[in-house]
Image (cartoon, rainbow, N blue to C red):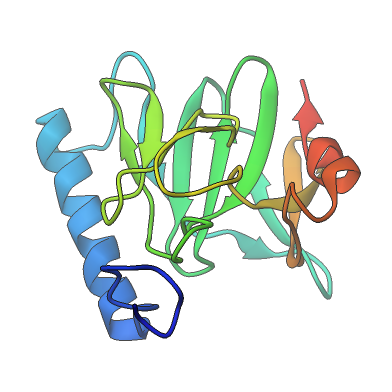
Length: 168
């Protein structure tokens, strides 16, 4: 058993391993979509970097349609899904491996242990035992502001996790 308590796990990846996984995610997403500009008809995936907005917030434009936007610099995922916007940690709640978006299945999956999550962060199945972690989020005009210092685990603060959404 590893020091992280998971049989067969490699432990928490370092920054370089995280960036390698993220690069594979980007390349895989672009390649699987078969396009140069990152878009798909059903549920597009995009890449952006939020801009600083005050002391503890990062601002993103409200996505125009359902889809996922990955902010590599802040290790965050912004998702618009069914008239709501969510901000998630890029890491799987089980072992902190960067999650991947599966555009054909419309869900997130951990490449390490195959845990799967709905676009709203709800756990489906796999080794993880809880939903994806959500950042505090609020709307201001045509942007959403994400507090990257306020990350909510559904199993520790269910009310805050449920409230971490912007309804459109």
